[in-house]
Length: 194
Image (cartoon, rainbow, N blue to C red):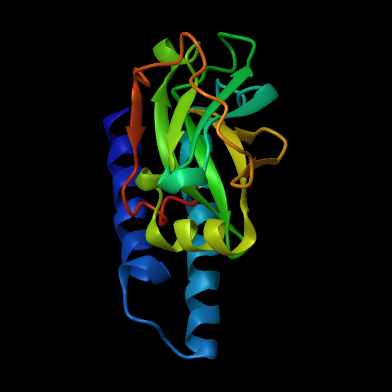
């Protein structure tokens, strides 16, 4: 288990160096090579994880994803969304954690992580916790595309894509959603493409 975690950490460190958020902008051809290198890192990481835990299958994909905006963008407020989903626990397909991943330039980037013990609360995502580039895209387009990832020793599975819109008026808080217990925002973790 320690070797897998060490390999995982190494892959993330390398990806952090290569990803556009962790370095200065390059020419078009060099950017393409960086994207290809990230894709190779993803494949290598998946291969290591599969070999390290052949007894586990990939987790079931999160189902019935629901995204509710609880704060609006009017009157200077920033956006806030509660994202919930259903997943079936299966000992042969264990889930280590859930990740909320946003579509950013054709890649899925991790914006928050959630331990499985807190899954009933879901993600409490706030606009201010997003990377500046994602916030800028939200302001320009009015929406962001997301997927919930179930990450386990057997691999990663994804929910269907869903949209968090920034054009809904203020609706007030949703009862029972306070605190975001167990959610860890991932600052500048756009490199976590795995």
